[in-house]
Image (cartoon, rainbow, N blue to C red; front, side):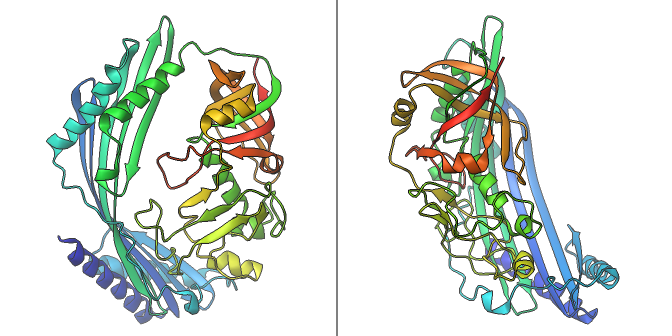
Length: 443
């Protein structure tokens, strides 16, 4: 089915859902429908290992009887399945309690002009060509150094999707998207020591993916650098989170300013809007309307128009991340945050990665985080980690089996610098983060 025909079909499904909800007595309703196809080809040790074709549909309907809410989901888009899903949602709504905050997002916030964000760039790729690209990636990694002893494989994945959302305000909108990625993971061995690492790239356009050989070489370099890691004793010292690890620090911030955490009073950033939470040089923003952005969207999951927004300006927290429910609980207005932050970025303080190492002088470079160790109520932070010891502004040797610990509120205030090395894959743009001091646990 052609993309335009699929969009038209999904729009009709959404309209049918909304009509059926009204027919069954709902005061208001909202529905989302998606269709996705994909191809994933994995090679390992020079041979094609798996070929997976995917084709998935998803449908969700939420109905409101006054302030009583019911929801249902299905993967079946047949008319009879639509009727059954709406009936199930209505049955649930009739037995739930009234919730004054429940309901559609405000009608005046709906996206009336939906811009084309250039998110659809299909890759007409056959299995043989996909396998050839993945093999070139894995070969570059395996041939990089004799110590690369094994491989977990290289995977090429390409996906095309269509999404339509509509509600009883008369809003129906949607758009097609594509996503492509190439990844490689290998194992290195030196004596009895074995280490694993990986690298990847992803994007909307196949032509913007990094060269397969460069992805493979990077995977090999990262793996070899970890060989013969050392342990060391517990200490306090500066810590540098490499750019590919730093997005987790922003995700912790976003979790702390989510409206649902705020109205439940389960965040260490409660009542901090207007407060200085970072140094005054820090700006953190989201740009949902960035063309070809990996998290771009003209409206959020409730149809609310998205826009550029600074979450932190001059180090000061500007507001929370609110969907319509959280906004009503807090007496505020939706910030088009249903579905999360889109295309987040933090401004750099201007130093390259090498300059950050020299600024740190002596401390720990974190290149991997493990486990879950963040208490969002108190801000206490403790994660298993691996990385490198830095001395005299230069990387000296790998370290492993350590923990890095602090308190996020203190860490954010004591942020020394953010690097210019922000050319990492993903929807969050950030360079490496240098912190003045953290506790590093070891032997």
